[in-house]
Image 1 (tube, rainbow, N blue to C red):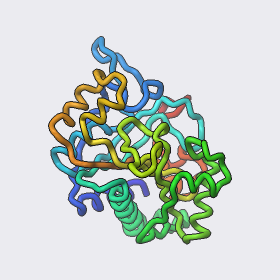
Image 2: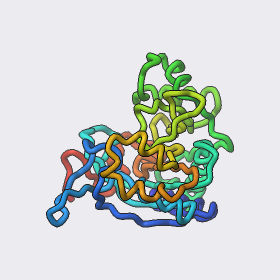
Image 3: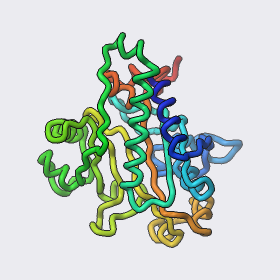
Image 4: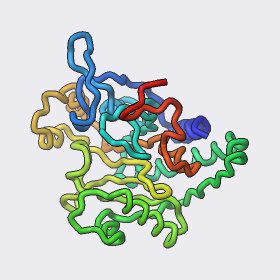
Length: 291
């Protein structure tokens, strides 16, 4: 199931003109927050296990225009839940010359459709054995703005993020109202998104970002990125640790955006597993280092 999904992902992005990349998993700077990274001793210097290939894939948009990667990422978040792992496989993509995050969402929709199609043809025995019901991927996945999503679930208007219960309720709403097991939630508050997120020009405080919900769980996070060097200098209090990343923007980068999809979480929802560890070979979490 997992292998077929990855094959479908690669095939869909190859068809759309993407180039597969392979980036370092030992990095000198934490991507998003120093509180959620694994620090390591790198020949006497401080280094980290990569939270994502974010900085690398953004830089490579300036070279290849459209890039993707399938690889491990590491999160030191102290979550002992049915949906979190300390190491998982991330399906990442980044593309240039976009208008806004909706161009990224359109690419993601094609990638998801490719994954479902590949599972349907490559994993027939597993589908029959497990009696799996594959989802239909709508031509246009329904979309709701974050502020409207809060209203739909009866959450306070100042909530900065969606809780798991909210995600489940929104998925039920999407199925009831649109007949879709997928739902885009857009326009998350800027304060809950990474510094490289592009703000929504029409709605101050909100972003040109999205999550994709699938069967009650956040599956994908993505959005439009900042692409001007001056914008990064404005949002970073101390740009020095990011100097290598920022150098790419000095010479001009196109408007771009991307997304990241957790493979194990995808498979868990696909087979209706109650715990992500059931769809993970040799899971790594708060307590498990063996086998």
